[in-house]
Image 1 (tube, rainbow, N blue to C red):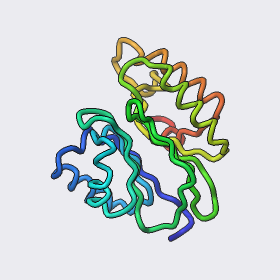
Image 2: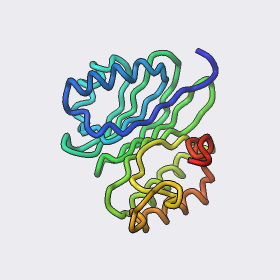
Image 3: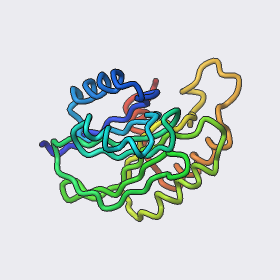
Length: 189
């Protein structure tokens, strides 16, 4: 493997259907990534052995219902890694945060599926969980169900979606000083 780590993040809008899951897994394998963060998978934790058998490599699932929400982290076998700690949202199945080492470099990887309602406490909880890991290197993936920059990211919306939660995420950004990789690479889009 080269020294770069390839991580893909995608909202699946449900993978309960076996054929859809097979198609999505086939698509994901063609991407030749190392780690895949999926949101809105509609899995509960009991499905982890089944999904891992279908994916054929290490799988982490967090979810409590097969009808909504849920996040999954899929690992490929094309790189070496060590999982040091796993933190799952046992209440709503909306996040997994892991402490992982790759090529002797430690970082935190968070896969987040933000609630559809305006819930700033969810993001306060995320911030607290991230701070508990005590690691400077973080990668935060997911679908936050809000926009940080409504002027650039929304068109013809009458109101800002989830305004209180958005303010909480902006506070989190002030504290953690993250780089939005997509925005950095697509400044004018």
